[in-house]
Every structure is written in C-alpha cells, then in structure tokens.
Length: 353
Image (cartoon, rainbow, N blue to C red; front, top):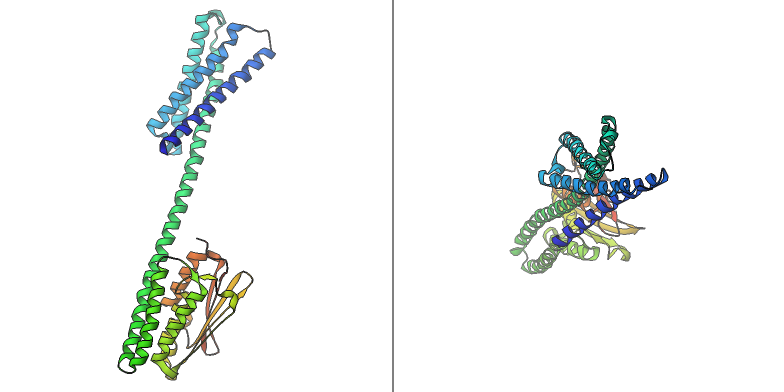
C-alpha cells in the first residue's frame, strides 16, 4: 500500500512538472509567434528553458526533501527559499545563455548586463512561484493529515474516558449490591435467594455493557427493576418505587447504567437517610427526536452539588452525556417539593461517536 501511495505521488509530481513547464513553454512560444516571424534558433530556446527548468526544480525538490525544509520554521524556510530561488535562477539563466551563445542564437554584441538581470529577475519570480506552490501543497497535505490524526486521537481519548468511567461505575454499584445481600442473608434467606438471582441478572448485564457504549432503554430499565427489587427486600416498607414509560421509548439507546446509577444515588443519599424512608420514581417519554427522562426521589440535594456537579452519580452522568452526545444532551438536578428531581434530555437517535 505504501509503495502504491509513493508511486501515485511521484506520478502526480511528474505530471505537474511536465504540464507546468510545458504550459510555460507553449504560452511563451505563442507570444513569440504573435510578435514576429519564426526563427528556429530562437524558438528552440523555449524547450531548452522548459527542460532546464524541470531539471533544476527537481534538484531543488531533492534538496528540500533531503534537508527536511518542510519541518523548518517560516523564518528559516523563507531565507532558504529566497537563497535557493536566486541560485537556481542564476544557474538556469547561465545555462540557457550558454546554449544560446554556443548555438549562435545570441551574439556577444547582443549581450547586456541589464538584459541579463531582467531575465534573471523573471526567472526568479517563476522559481519562487514554483516553491510557493510546492510548499502550499505540502502544507495543506500535512494540515489534512494532522486533522485526521487529531480526530483519531480525540476518538481514542473519548473511548478511553468512557471505559474509565464505566470501570469506576461497575465496582461502585457491585459493592453496594453485595452489601445489601449480606444484610439479607441472616434476616430473610428466601429474600436473599431472590436478591442473588436479581444480582446475577445485573452481573450479566454488566458484562454485556463492557462491549458497548449504549444500550436499549428497555434493557437498562430491567436492570433498574432488579436493583430496586433488591433494595426493596432490604428496606421493606421504607422504600416505595414506581417505574413508568411509554412504549415508544423501549428501543431508544442510552448510556448503560446511567439510570441505575442515579436511582442508586437517590436511595443512598436520599431514602436511606430518612427515618421514615421514601420513594423513587422513574418516568420516560419521547418528545419528537428526544428522550425525556426524569428520576425523582425523597431527600434533599445541597446547592453546591447542583452548581458544581458534586457527587459520584451526578458528575459521572454529566461526563458520560457530554462524551457521548456533546451539546445535544442536557442534565439538570433540583429540589422540588421536598424531593430531588433529575431531568435528562438526550437525542433519541443515538450518540455522536
């Protein structure tokens, strides 16, 4: 593949060289014909000039690549281009005039210093334009390459951050679930068996999500039901919960463990701290191209947690939503009528990565 790429680049380079200098030769030859009669000795000057131009600029290209001028700073590059333009222009003019004198196209009496410098100046402009075009092509090529590398790097960083967030999430949840089961073993063995079944479902779900960034809402909500069933066995009458959603949201893709994390957060920081217990309600509906998800629980959230996204569940969810959806998703948390309300709006069409 690399060899094919190099062959194509060299092919394009030679096509540009020949067509560019060939076009220069044809243009000047046509101007020459329009201003006077045909003189074959003077006419051959143009193909000589084109051939020497191709050869000289190719040598310049070899020097540029060997000395790695592309990597130089603009200041250093300008001085090198200026000097190389003068030297190559001088060489081209010297060779062409030498050919003209040796073939008798120009006689010694026709030579003038002013004419020499005019030709040198015009040739210098031509070589300078060649250099500008050459470096601009490489500049845009390198810019495109760097943009691709940047996008690949950003995608890799996002993938790494998402995997890191999920690796933080799963142990956090599993330890809390195991603590809940441990509390049930002696008090209610039958309930403990049910809880183990529910936990095994959650383990299975947890293993599955390691291979994906989003899951259908229906799969996530089943895990939430297992979790709430497990916590219900632990808190008994102190915990009440309700899950309600419209059928058209079942297949909408959402970040895995997102709802479960927020429900767990509500129980840990809200319901469990209230002597009388409390409730957790989860509702979801679709509004055009967006999923509107609301999680409410008994308790109170401090103002600094709202403004600065403090707390594991809040910060984790906001980071994941930002990584997956960017500005298309929104997250808000507030105190409403002596309970906490979390509202999430995200695209119903999936993530951006």
